[in-house]
Length: 356
Image (cartoon, rainbow, N blue to C red):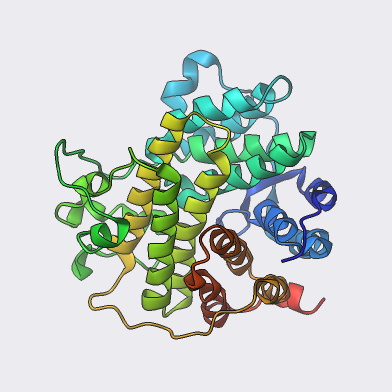
């Protein structure tokens, strides 16, 4: 994989300065995350052109909202109506001074609602933090602020009941014990957030968070969770929707590992614990029983994965491919070199990007 040249990132982020967190269709604006992922996997020359090709899909930002007062913060967590006030709050909070303590404070506070906006708040924070670790610039601080706001406003805890003293398992063993939402209660024809609102119908799901132990080697645990959900991707993704759903299980864990070097260890443990819960929730709400079966694909070379993702142009394909490359680099598990090809087969090319 080619070397990342982060001097290409800010020119790609600049056109997004006046644009908001949502697309015209109501879904999340992926453009800044895609730009950072392209730079990170050495496809920096495509970052700005990808953004420019997709600007017309993004709603403008509302920057006129007053920032939240400190006395309002707790009441505004989980209130999407205060999204613009959260944006203003974090932009002001990160305008000067060290950004790292702000990240640690709010990642710790927001961890239980990590699934916010289908984990896009967390994921955008992860991309922003990785860029800031290379160089601290105003545009990269903006990315961190936008990500934290997208986490705080639509903050969405999943049904949770911790069980003290319960036996714990490896992610593979734990996943086999996750109850599935009964078909009669599934709501999988709309937003992912709506689908996971049905988790209370999966008997015993509330205790799923206690199936794994986040007190040991937390980085190894995160890699194991990602590896298991790469396997889920190969076995259970058979439609464009399930490709998008299980992309988030993998990219959310990647985001946590981007954040981990900056935050306190206790914060990382909380994030991994709730990251497992989120991935398990996606499995519960969307997986079929029995699984459709594996996609047997040859592993691709890392440079080929990066180039093919950039050429394909789909935002989920790009972000997933970059995450899989990082996971393979750390673990040498070839499963991560099989997932991107399956994602490209399931998701249509971005026609605007593919024409360029």
